[in-house]
Image (cartoon, rainbow over all chains, first blue to last red):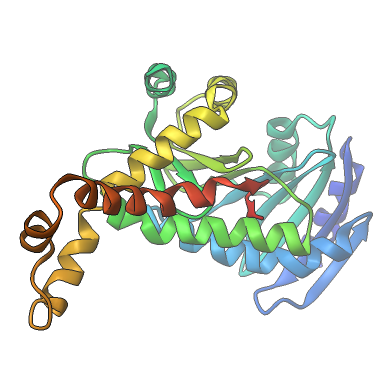
Length: 108
Length: 180
């Protein structure tokens, strides 16, 4: 419950236009904002393949991904067996927002 | 080659461990990854990156740049028209600097240079094919180097080389990573 409230705070962050939280099996736990339906379809696959790409290069413990499109940016963060995808608009300063998201979620 | 200097600039960024340029078909064109990491080792990675691009293009939005952060390292891959530039770096590497320098690298990749790189990659891969074919055909037909000089000396010997080069040119006819 506390986690849910914390995630909802993400929407208050400037330039965040939506977020989606999915379980490992792909079930959408919660979502809010624009463009999140499409992201919900791919975010779990994306996280799984990101882990595999890392393994190919001998890298372990995937903890964040940024997908840079022309009009938006997606930040993907694994979260206690779930996946959080946050959509930002192109004006967003990604490192600052990622820092804020990590603070909100009490991640290191 | 100018591109090698640009790649040197990427590797000069403190914390950057390696750079690799590969075609959207998964063929390594320039490999400047750490020496302990041979292309055979990360071949799976390139295949997965290509699959990731395909899936995201089809089911989400066409995105060219992906940054994957792991515990101590990050991997950045950036797609141009027919190639993907991959950078492997430590956490301490400056991401913005890397983006700037890789912008320059991607600007230097012209169609002519790409053709040259693909041809070079094709030639590098070429010696592997006869090794596989020769033992199978050895029983029924004479080995290639012995038979050809005996029948027709020069022109016949040149023709197979051109034929071998043709397949490597074929994948160049692409638009945004798709053959047409």
